[in-house]
Image (cartoon, rainbow, N blue to C red; front, side, top):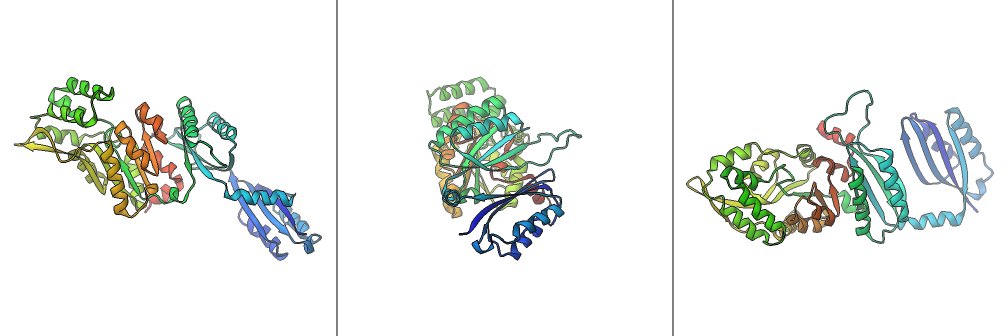
Length: 409
């Protein structure tokens, strides 16, 4: 019978190692069943699973591999693998896979330890760990808004994905790091459309509060907002009441607010990278097209859906034209855009911060609560609270070196 052998090689990395070792195997026509390599700070760890035919069990393949490895200053170890153990390993290739991503300003041993322990408690096994963020100099100060990200590929059945999300959210809140878990499906690698809320997501303000302050009705608008948050008013009623208080506001005020909209950290980088990769970008907002279209011109956004303000003689009438964009409408628009682009909902990313974003976050393949209200963070499947919008790039599996290459295009 043939013998399956695990070959482990360790030592200083250099070009030509894999070529030399596999050329030795090739001389004996040895099948390679699996191969994997990782390198950390020029330290190589290489593994190959090979099958040694019965007729070759007494051949010189191991001797030649030892000589090859020794000549390159490498340590090499051979471990026989029991046939039943190998077949169990083969059967496990159908197990579910999940991608777990850590995001923060800095990732330390405690972050990795606590996340790894949580994974192990649920019977999941880590197959692979990748650093997505770039190498860090210890002699120069970190760049402003520097990001750190590590990605785990884990194997095993998740009995309750909602409970796992909740446990990871609990860790996030006590460790000042974001932890997201996604099913590792083909759709994770084929996202095509990103739908953003505007206020407190793409921009760091609520435009209606800016308008209210300019009109001198800030307290009144805030009181209506609080009533809506307490559930005393639905979104549409609270929206119409707040709009009515803005009647008579001169359009010149809106021009000034639009010109100084505070853009959220990482928005420029995120959208630039996504557009270079061919993503379609949409704003689905309960705010106003007047300001969303300003962002559309700045970023080259493909679709804008928001509330259309009415003007008469250069002043607000206190009314909106057409259908009010609330949470249900956002979800409906997301579905319509996915159909228009010919993609599945699993290929859509939705990002928002408020309760009226939950309907679209819940149906998107990747729904992200961004620096969100507590109720939204608890109900959304993914959350970012410690970094800017460009942290989403890591949730898509992108590495800093990939992004640097895009920068050069």
